[in-house]
Image (cartoon, rainbow over all chains, first blue to last red; front, top):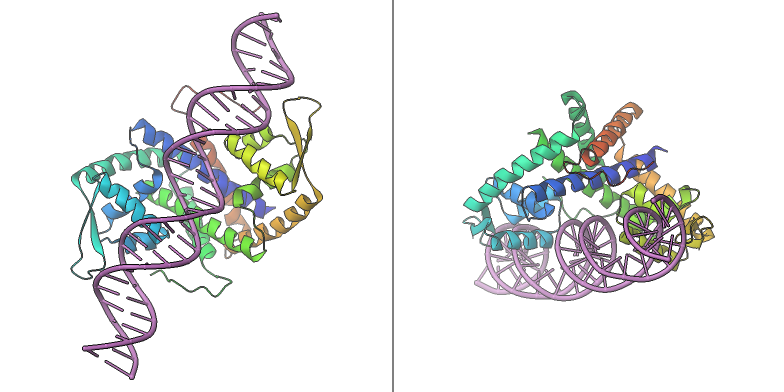
Length: 153
Length: 153
DNA sequence: CCTATATAGTGGACATAGGCAACCAATTGG
DNA sequence: CCAATTGGTTGCCTATGTCCACTATATAGG
């Protein structure tokens, strides 16, 4: 049964990965939840980043992103500034503390990735990523229902 | 940066997969959350299943498993019976309704898996599963800390 | 211009998920 | 018998994700 294998394999992998990531986060004395880290990374990496961009990139709910962003601002890791192009939204950028945090995070994620990919060569990792991307697209693709509420990019 | 790619790829894949699964669950008029389905599957598949077995197989917290099991019993999908080998624990088995549910679930997971693996040949899927298993082991493996608390033997 | 509609973001409420620690009861081993 | 361990339960908290309603701005159509 490939179906069952795939399902369980995904759940287990995700569980294990999160576990590893959390362990690393602790070890580095960071108190941010994983989602917050992902959002912070997005803010740091994307040039004219708005909440909308994060929402689209992560496929997450708007309200969730808002709340995470609120937390990050409260923690002094992210700043909002007026968006001259659209007064409904704000531009997001990491503060100095945010940049610092991002560096720590980069290290820590690198360690996690190194841990996971131990014993795999670049070719295999590449294949894995390619298939994962295909699966992601497949899963979100054919909607089976009249949905078409949002399109990504 | 493979690290960042891997991290994001995993998160995205899991998010997309869960989304697809949930859509299928809805379509089949099933009201069980994903975790409950996983636990029910475990109970159905493993011969002398106890809560402990589920905990070990899924790597989940004991308390979580207890609660999910309680729900499943309350829903009439799982039955507990005395374990003659150990009076602390009970043997778990699906009821008739549970078996029925498992059949529906099997269909639905098959559909989800089929959706995800569309355009992938058996070889690629196999590779993917193998690498995923390796990563899972890696992630849980070298603990960085003196842990060695349990091994399944 | 005014109105209708879409879009960006916010917040409330809730469900699902996972973790930590205390605890009980039964088992095991000295 | 006593101590430590193990299987399970419960309380409590955090994290994650979704749905819905709402505000404010933007934009298209009349």
